[in-house]
View 1 (cartoon, rainbow, N blue to C red):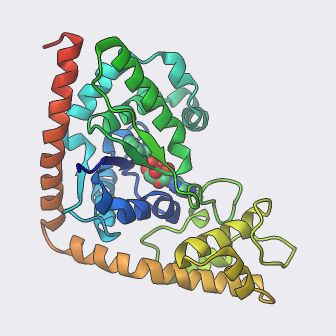
View 2 (view 1 turned 135 degrees about the vertical axis):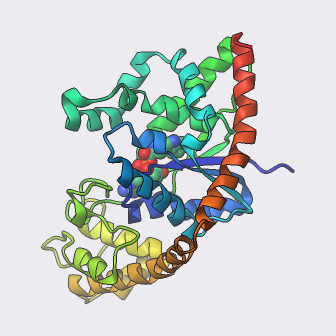
Length: 328
Ligand code: TYM
């Protein structure tokens, strides 16, 4: 039987963090041999907010390198850079022409991001979810493994696909989001009421995948807790709950076992053990990252192969769309 197809994307804004890893990348790795996978570094999404060209160039390669270092394999998965496959921009334009503005006005992520930028907000940032829909629909995607914050975008993609199919006949597969039961929203360390993010200003909130052991220890040490002195899973106690959830995700232990293990121990013990667990998890990933980026041309060759494989599928789909619309 033919395997179903998975597509997911990640921005090239650098600073990949534990939230990206636990909410998305780790699941991509775990699921990859059950599906045909496309994993994309979405650099065209990244330029919806201002970027320094040389930093961007470095970040694109860093993110791609980290995906392979985390365990994405060329045999199961096509890894590529979005701007290397032109069909993404072209399909986004065509989908723009059937997407009502009202649908985009409802996107909560746009509301949040545009508040920070006020007058400077680009048309691209507003249109961001339509490009994301193009990404997904080009590959006849069945499943989109993402963190919780992307759920609304995947639903919008489904709506756009449905509208297109209704108007022009069945062209697009309707995708479903896959959000992990735990880890879909890893929270910040200092500010555990907000999700962990790539933001430079909130460096202490996030553990970045390339952080050194000392940086990790220092960040976990500074994490916000509470005054209850009791180590128990409780969604209302954001700080402790987040630390325990990350510990649970990394060790694979059951909540009851974890609570037992920490009975009578202090927050300091929890933080120390958590920090060491994070360090142990990231160490092999960091080593592989250094190996594969240390070898000249190795990563670029993999990405060139990825773009070629992605293009074969995407171009075929794009031609179908042009044809249906009457442009060919
Ligand atoms: P991005 O680059 O912000 O994040 C990449 C993935 O990481 C997940 N994530 C988190 N998961 C748990 N806890 C967190 N604190 C956390 N922060 C981020 C995100 O949900 C995402 O799965 N718009 C997308 C990129 C994109 C895309 C696509 C995704 C473009 N086209 C097509 C899927 C399909 C984004 O900005 O992800």
